[in-house]
Figure 1: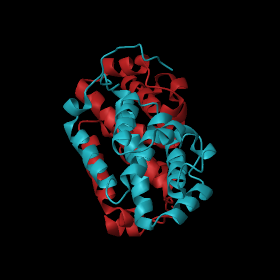
Figure 2: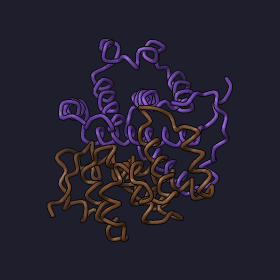
Figure 3: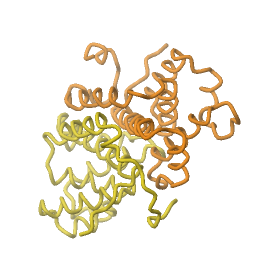
Figure 4: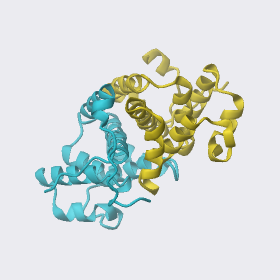
Length: 153
Length: 155
């Protein structure tokens, strides 16, 4: 575990691998179709918390506030399972799926979590929830590995 | 592509049907990540990430692809323990595998300065960008295939 005080300059992926960057932007556009934008922000924030992507958390918390997502939801997101009355069934199902998809190193995507999401969403919606979760995971990996600098706010 | 996909068995969602733009974007990303990277190194990155993420379909596919590219059976056997395998893996392979592991295991820690600096010292900036891209891309495929539970074909 490193600390955030390290200031080693890392590569700018957009400059050294522009086709990759463009492809992830296309992926992001594809994943953003047919998904509720508020739900998408919750997926992005929860995955970014688990993957420790500071840049992503900063960006998506700001985006979520712009969309009108409540401070209470943002505060309780890491403990959503203990705050079930605050999150809708769709949000809970999507967050559970996002957590298991993000945590693949520890376990699989369980039948229980998959079935809950399959019951809460249409097949198209479920495909797009999965797409959003894996897309933010890709951004998280870029953000952390290249240590994207945080804007001062 | 769809014809090939139709032959695959997924217990769960046929995501290439529900989210075709996702599949197209992933193919574009895969092609972009495969540029300017040694194909053997690319396969080692894909296999190690797929081991950590427990993607059966991906392991089945990429160990076969690795053999086709001439990666030795010994390397495939011990890649999960590459750090203990002395000189079996080249310095470039070791640097890329260490970086891949860090990129794959974000839940357990960051990408340390040590791991990053070792890779940055041995690869050009372009090569390093493509190693990162390959690790990011296989992580995305791992997440799709584990979530929809794509089954490896019986061989």
